[in-house]
Image (tube, rainbow, N blue to C red; front, top):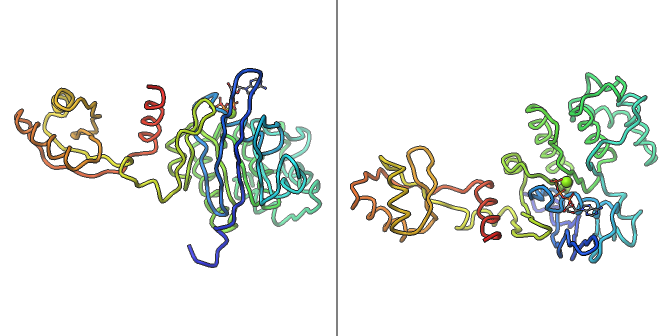
Length: 310
Ligand SMILES: Nc1ncnc2c1ncn2[C@@H]1O[C@H](COP(=O)(O)OP(=O)(O)OP(=O)(O)O)[C@@H](O)[C@H]1O
Ligand SMILES: [Mg+2]
Protein backbone atom coordinates (compact mmCIF):
# COMPACT_ATOMS: atom_id res chain seq x y z
CA UNK A 1 0.00 0.00 0.00
CA UNK A 2 1.19 3.53 -0.67
CA UNK A 3 2.14 5.78 2.19
CA UNK A 4 -0.48 8.35 1.20
CA UNK A 5 -3.47 6.08 1.78
CA UNK A 6 -5.63 6.30 4.87
CA UNK A 7 -5.22 2.69 5.93
CA UNK A 8 -3.95 3.80 9.32
CA UNK A 9 -7.38 5.30 10.06
CA UNK A 10 -9.12 3.28 12.74
CA UNK A 11 -12.72 2.96 11.60
CA UNK A 12 -14.16 0.46 14.08
CA UNK A 13 -13.08 -0.02 17.66
CA UNK A 14 -14.76 -2.77 19.70
CA UNK A 15 -13.75 -2.25 23.32
CA UNK A 16 -14.43 -4.73 26.10
CA UNK A 17 -17.85 -5.78 24.81
CA UNK A 18 -19.68 -8.20 27.07
CA UNK A 19 -23.31 -9.24 26.72
CA UNK A 20 -25.26 -11.38 29.15
CA UNK A 21 -28.84 -12.56 28.97
CA UNK A 22 -29.88 -13.39 32.53
CA UNK A 23 -27.11 -15.71 33.70
CA UNK A 24 -25.76 -16.66 30.28
CA UNK A 25 -22.82 -14.65 28.96
CA UNK A 26 -23.04 -14.71 25.16
CA UNK A 27 -20.14 -12.28 24.53
CA UNK A 28 -17.17 -12.17 26.83
CA UNK A 29 -14.88 -9.10 26.71
CA UNK A 30 -14.51 -8.76 22.93
CA UNK A 31 -11.76 -6.39 21.73
CA UNK A 32 -10.57 -5.63 18.20
CA UNK A 33 -10.04 -2.76 15.75
CA UNK A 34 -10.64 -2.53 12.02
CA UNK A 35 -8.82 -0.01 9.83
CA UNK A 36 -9.80 1.70 6.56
CA UNK A 37 -9.43 -0.65 3.60
CA UNK A 38 -9.36 -3.80 5.74
CA UNK A 39 -11.70 -6.79 5.38
CA UNK A 40 -12.12 -8.48 8.75
CA UNK A 41 -13.80 -11.86 9.25
CA UNK A 42 -15.66 -12.64 12.48
CA UNK A 43 -15.77 -16.42 12.34
CA UNK A 44 -17.51 -18.88 14.58
CA UNK A 45 -20.01 -21.72 14.75
CA UNK A 46 -23.78 -21.35 15.27
CA UNK A 47 -24.53 -19.60 18.53
CA UNK A 48 -20.99 -18.19 18.89
CA UNK A 49 -22.33 -14.63 19.27
CA UNK A 50 -21.73 -13.20 15.78
CA UNK A 51 -25.15 -11.66 15.23
CA UNK A 52 -25.27 -10.38 18.81
CA UNK A 53 -21.99 -8.50 18.34
CA UNK A 54 -23.12 -7.07 15.00
CA UNK A 55 -26.39 -5.89 16.56
CA UNK A 56 -24.37 -4.17 19.29
CA UNK A 57 -22.12 -2.51 16.69
CA UNK A 58 -25.25 -1.19 14.95
CA UNK A 59 -26.78 0.06 18.20
CA UNK A 60 -29.70 -2.38 17.99
CA UNK A 61 -28.72 -4.20 21.22
CA UNK A 62 -27.24 -2.65 24.36
CA UNK A 63 -24.07 -4.28 25.68
CA UNK A 64 -23.84 -5.30 29.33
CA UNK A 65 -20.35 -3.77 29.39
CA UNK A 66 -17.99 -2.10 26.95
CA UNK A 67 -18.35 0.36 24.11
CA UNK A 68 -18.16 0.47 20.30
CA UNK A 69 -16.64 3.40 18.39
CA UNK A 70 -17.21 4.10 14.70
CA UNK A 71 -14.77 6.71 13.37
CA UNK A 72 -14.15 7.74 16.96
CA UNK A 73 -17.82 8.22 17.91
CA UNK A 74 -19.43 6.00 20.52
CA UNK A 75 -22.41 4.00 19.24
CA UNK A 76 -23.73 3.81 22.79
CA UNK A 77 -23.29 7.52 23.67
CA UNK A 78 -23.33 9.37 20.33
CA UNK A 79 -25.56 7.07 18.29
CA UNK A 80 -26.48 9.46 15.47
CA UNK A 81 -22.92 10.71 14.93
CA UNK A 82 -21.57 7.16 14.98
CA UNK A 83 -24.05 5.53 12.59
CA UNK A 84 -23.70 8.18 9.86
CA UNK A 85 -20.58 6.24 8.86
CA UNK A 86 -22.21 2.80 9.04
CA UNK A 87 -23.84 0.58 6.43
CA UNK A 88 -25.14 -2.78 7.67
CA UNK A 89 -26.85 -5.94 6.56
CA UNK A 90 -28.28 -8.12 9.30
CA UNK A 91 -30.49 -11.17 8.93
CA UNK A 92 -33.59 -10.60 6.78
CA UNK A 93 -33.77 -7.77 4.32
CA UNK A 94 -36.25 -5.10 5.36
CA UNK A 95 -37.95 -3.53 2.35
CA UNK A 96 -41.36 -2.53 1.00
CA UNK A 97 -42.75 -5.47 -0.93
CA UNK A 98 -45.13 -3.42 -3.12
CA UNK A 99 -42.30 -1.21 -4.42
CA UNK A 100 -39.61 -2.21 -6.89
CA UNK A 101 -36.03 -2.86 -5.77
CA UNK A 102 -35.09 0.46 -7.33
CA UNK A 103 -37.86 2.40 -5.59
CA UNK A 104 -36.79 0.87 -2.29
CA UNK A 105 -33.21 2.00 -2.82
CA UNK A 106 -34.30 5.50 -3.78
CA UNK A 107 -36.48 5.60 -0.67
CA UNK A 108 -33.65 4.47 1.65
CA UNK A 109 -31.21 6.90 0.04
CA UNK A 110 -33.73 9.73 0.56
CA UNK A 111 -33.82 8.99 4.30
CA UNK A 112 -30.23 10.17 4.37
CA UNK A 113 -31.11 13.20 2.29
CA UNK A 114 -29.26 12.52 -0.93
CA UNK A 115 -30.60 10.54 -3.85
CA UNK A 116 -27.87 10.17 -6.43
CA UNK A 117 -29.37 8.09 -9.26
CA UNK A 118 -26.01 7.50 -10.92
CA UNK A 119 -24.63 6.12 -7.68
CA UNK A 120 -27.70 3.90 -7.20
CA UNK A 121 -27.25 2.51 -10.73
CA UNK A 122 -23.60 1.80 -9.99
CA UNK A 123 -24.47 -0.07 -6.78
CA UNK A 124 -27.28 -2.02 -8.49
CA UNK A 125 -24.76 -3.10 -11.11
CA UNK A 126 -22.18 -4.01 -8.45
CA UNK A 127 -24.66 -6.32 -6.71
CA UNK A 128 -25.76 -7.87 -10.03
CA UNK A 129 -29.41 -6.77 -9.95
CA UNK A 130 -29.61 -4.57 -13.05
CA UNK A 131 -31.86 -6.96 -14.99
CA UNK A 132 -34.55 -7.21 -12.27
CA UNK A 133 -34.24 -3.96 -10.37
CA UNK A 134 -37.57 -2.51 -11.60
CA UNK A 135 -39.57 -5.61 -10.60
CA UNK A 136 -41.57 -5.55 -7.39
CA UNK A 137 -39.57 -6.56 -4.32
CA UNK A 138 -42.15 -9.26 -3.44
CA UNK A 139 -41.32 -11.12 -6.67
CA UNK A 140 -37.63 -11.50 -5.71
CA UNK A 141 -36.00 -14.77 -4.70
CA UNK A 142 -34.15 -15.06 -1.39
CA UNK A 143 -30.76 -14.46 -3.01
CA UNK A 144 -32.09 -11.40 -4.86
CA UNK A 145 -33.36 -10.01 -1.55
CA UNK A 146 -29.87 -10.53 -0.10
CA UNK A 147 -28.45 -8.55 -3.00
CA UNK A 148 -30.90 -5.69 -2.39
CA UNK A 149 -29.95 -5.73 1.30
CA UNK A 150 -26.30 -5.40 0.32
CA UNK A 151 -27.14 -2.55 -2.06
CA UNK A 152 -28.99 -0.82 0.82
CA UNK A 153 -25.95 -1.18 3.04
CA UNK A 154 -23.71 0.28 0.33
CA UNK A 155 -25.86 3.40 -0.27
CA UNK A 156 -24.00 6.56 0.73
CA UNK A 157 -20.67 4.73 0.64
CA UNK A 158 -20.27 4.19 4.39
CA UNK A 159 -16.82 4.13 5.98
CA UNK A 160 -17.77 0.97 7.85
CA UNK A 161 -19.70 -1.86 6.23
CA UNK A 162 -20.93 -4.64 8.51
CA UNK A 163 -22.38 -7.79 6.99
CA UNK A 164 -23.89 -10.69 8.91
CA UNK A 165 -23.49 -13.92 6.90
CA UNK A 166 -23.74 -12.09 3.57
CA UNK A 167 -23.32 -15.19 1.40
CA UNK A 168 -26.42 -16.88 2.86
CA UNK A 169 -28.70 -17.75 -0.02
CA UNK A 170 -26.36 -16.56 -2.74
CA UNK A 171 -25.58 -18.86 -5.66
CA UNK A 172 -21.97 -19.56 -6.74
CA UNK A 173 -21.88 -16.56 -9.09
CA UNK A 174 -23.38 -14.40 -6.35
CA UNK A 175 -20.64 -15.42 -3.92
CA UNK A 176 -17.91 -14.63 -6.44
CA UNK A 177 -19.50 -11.28 -7.34
CA UNK A 178 -19.90 -10.38 -3.68
CA UNK A 179 -16.23 -11.10 -3.06
CA UNK A 180 -15.26 -8.94 -6.02
CA UNK A 181 -17.53 -6.09 -4.94
CA UNK A 182 -16.26 -6.11 -1.36
CA UNK A 183 -12.62 -6.19 -2.45
CA UNK A 184 -13.21 -3.22 -4.74
CA UNK A 185 -15.00 -1.31 -1.94
CA UNK A 186 -12.10 -1.95 0.42
CA UNK A 187 -9.37 -1.14 -2.07
CA UNK A 188 -10.89 1.82 -3.92
CA UNK A 189 -13.22 3.39 -1.40
CA UNK A 190 -11.05 2.43 1.60
CA UNK A 191 -14.12 1.02 3.30
CA UNK A 192 -13.50 -0.99 6.46
CA UNK A 193 -15.56 -4.18 6.14
CA UNK A 194 -16.57 -6.65 8.84
CA UNK A 195 -18.10 -9.92 7.70
CA UNK A 196 -19.43 -12.65 9.96
CA UNK A 197 -19.52 -16.21 8.71
CA UNK A 198 -18.98 -19.86 9.46
CA UNK A 199 -18.00 -20.64 5.85
CA UNK A 200 -14.24 -20.68 6.11
CA UNK A 201 -13.29 -21.43 2.52
CA UNK A 202 -15.15 -18.28 1.45
CA UNK A 203 -13.66 -16.20 4.24
CA UNK A 204 -10.13 -17.31 3.41
CA UNK A 205 -10.50 -15.83 -0.08
CA UNK A 206 -12.09 -12.63 1.20
CA UNK A 207 -10.53 -11.53 4.49
CA UNK A 208 -7.27 -9.76 5.35
CA UNK A 209 -7.63 -10.49 9.03
CA UNK A 210 -9.95 -12.44 11.28
CA UNK A 211 -11.14 -13.36 14.75
CA UNK A 212 -12.20 -16.87 15.65
CA UNK A 213 -14.93 -16.86 18.26
CA UNK A 214 -16.59 -19.67 20.17
CA UNK A 215 -19.22 -19.35 22.91
CA UNK A 216 -18.73 -15.59 23.01
CA UNK A 217 -14.96 -15.67 23.49
CA UNK A 218 -12.36 -14.66 20.91
CA UNK A 219 -9.93 -17.58 20.75
CA UNK A 220 -7.67 -16.17 18.09
CA UNK A 221 -7.16 -12.78 16.53
CA UNK A 222 -4.98 -12.50 13.43
CA UNK A 223 -3.92 -9.65 11.26
CA UNK A 224 -2.81 -10.43 7.72
CA UNK A 225 0.92 -10.26 8.43
CA UNK A 226 0.65 -12.65 11.36
CA UNK A 227 -0.98 -15.35 9.28
CA UNK A 228 2.30 -16.88 8.24
CA UNK A 229 3.61 -17.72 11.72
CA UNK A 230 5.08 -21.23 12.08
CA UNK A 231 1.96 -22.67 13.70
CA UNK A 232 0.14 -21.92 10.45
CA UNK A 233 2.57 -24.06 8.48
CA UNK A 234 2.88 -27.80 8.11
CA UNK A 235 5.14 -30.24 6.28
CA UNK A 236 3.69 -32.61 3.71
CA UNK A 237 5.79 -35.77 3.45
CA UNK A 238 5.27 -37.71 0.27
CA UNK A 239 5.40 -41.50 0.80
CA UNK A 240 4.41 -44.74 -0.94
CA UNK A 241 2.03 -45.98 1.79
CA UNK A 242 0.36 -42.96 3.44
CA UNK A 243 -2.04 -44.98 5.65
CA UNK A 244 0.75 -47.15 7.02
CA UNK A 245 2.99 -44.07 7.40
CA UNK A 246 0.30 -42.42 9.54
CA UNK A 247 0.16 -45.44 11.82
CA UNK A 248 3.96 -45.50 12.18
CA UNK A 249 4.13 -41.77 12.99
CA UNK A 250 1.27 -42.08 15.46
CA UNK A 251 2.95 -44.94 17.32
CA UNK A 252 6.41 -43.34 17.38
CA UNK A 253 5.54 -39.66 18.00
CA UNK A 254 1.97 -39.72 19.34
CA UNK A 255 0.83 -37.49 16.45
CA UNK A 256 -2.31 -37.88 14.34
CA UNK A 257 -1.10 -36.88 10.87
CA UNK A 258 -3.72 -36.18 8.23
CA UNK A 259 -3.45 -37.67 4.77
CA UNK A 260 -3.52 -35.45 1.68
CA UNK A 261 -3.17 -37.47 -1.52
CA UNK A 262 0.08 -39.43 -1.23
CA UNK A 263 1.39 -37.26 1.61
CA UNK A 264 1.04 -37.21 5.37
CA UNK A 265 0.93 -33.83 7.13
CA UNK A 266 3.01 -33.13 10.23
CA UNK A 267 3.59 -29.89 12.22
CA UNK A 268 6.23 -27.48 10.91
CA UNK A 269 9.38 -28.47 12.82
CA UNK A 270 12.63 -29.36 11.05
CA UNK A 271 13.91 -31.64 13.83
CA UNK A 272 10.62 -33.51 13.92
CA UNK A 273 10.70 -33.83 10.14
CA UNK A 274 14.18 -35.44 10.20
CA UNK A 275 13.13 -37.88 12.92
CA UNK A 276 9.89 -38.80 11.15
CA UNK A 277 11.74 -39.49 7.89
CA UNK A 278 14.24 -41.72 9.76
CA UNK A 279 11.42 -43.60 11.46
CA UNK A 280 9.49 -44.13 8.20
CA UNK A 281 12.60 -45.38 6.39
CA UNK A 282 13.39 -47.75 9.25
CA UNK A 283 9.93 -49.29 8.61
CA UNK A 284 10.72 -49.65 4.89
CA UNK A 285 8.41 -46.86 3.80
CA UNK A 286 9.76 -44.94 0.79
CA UNK A 287 9.97 -41.17 1.41
CA UNK A 288 9.92 -39.09 -1.79
CA UNK A 289 10.44 -35.71 -0.11
CA UNK A 290 8.95 -33.07 2.17
CA UNK A 291 7.27 -29.78 1.29
CA UNK A 292 6.40 -26.86 3.58
CA UNK A 293 2.77 -25.80 3.14
CA UNK A 294 0.60 -23.07 4.60
CA UNK A 295 -2.33 -24.39 6.58
CA UNK A 296 -5.73 -23.44 5.27
CA UNK A 297 -7.96 -21.23 7.40
CA UNK A 298 -10.12 -24.32 7.86
CA UNK A 299 -7.18 -26.23 9.43
CA UNK A 300 -6.27 -23.28 11.68
CA UNK A 301 -9.89 -22.93 12.78
CA UNK A 302 -10.33 -26.62 13.55
CA UNK A 303 -7.01 -26.71 15.49
CA UNK A 304 -8.06 -23.74 17.59
CA UNK A 305 -11.55 -25.04 18.37
CA UNK A 306 -10.14 -28.50 19.14
CA UNK A 307 -7.53 -27.09 21.55
CA UNK A 308 -10.14 -24.91 23.23
CA UNK A 309 -12.51 -27.80 23.88
CA UNK A 310 -9.85 -30.17 25.26
N1 LIG B 1 -32.62 -12.10 22.92
C1 LIG B 1 -31.93 -13.13 23.40
N2 LIG B 1 -32.21 -13.68 24.59
C2 LIG B 1 -31.50 -14.72 25.10
N3 LIG B 1 -30.46 -15.29 24.46
C3 LIG B 1 -30.12 -14.79 23.26
C4 LIG B 1 -30.83 -13.70 22.66
N4 LIG B 1 -30.26 -13.42 21.47
C5 LIG B 1 -29.26 -14.31 21.32
N5 LIG B 1 -29.16 -15.13 22.39
C6 LIG B 1 -28.19 -16.23 22.60
O1 LIG B 1 -26.90 -15.70 22.36
C7 LIG B 1 -26.05 -16.70 21.78
C8 LIG B 1 -25.40 -16.13 20.54
O2 LIG B 1 -26.39 -15.94 19.54
P1 LIG B 1 -26.08 -15.29 18.13
O3 LIG B 1 -27.36 -15.16 17.38
O4 LIG B 1 -25.30 -14.05 18.35
O5 LIG B 1 -25.14 -16.39 17.48
P2 LIG B 1 -24.53 -16.46 16.00
O6 LIG B 1 -23.06 -16.62 16.16
O7 LIG B 1 -25.03 -15.35 15.19
O8 LIG B 1 -25.11 -17.85 15.48
P3 LIG B 1 -25.61 -18.30 14.00
O9 LIG B 1 -24.38 -18.79 13.27
O10 LIG B 1 -26.53 -19.42 14.30
O11 LIG B 1 -26.27 -17.14 13.35
C9 LIG B 1 -26.92 -17.92 21.55
O12 LIG B 1 -26.70 -18.82 22.59
C10 LIG B 1 -28.34 -17.36 21.61
O13 LIG B 1 -29.23 -18.32 22.07
MG1 LIG C 1 -26.13 -15.18 13.46
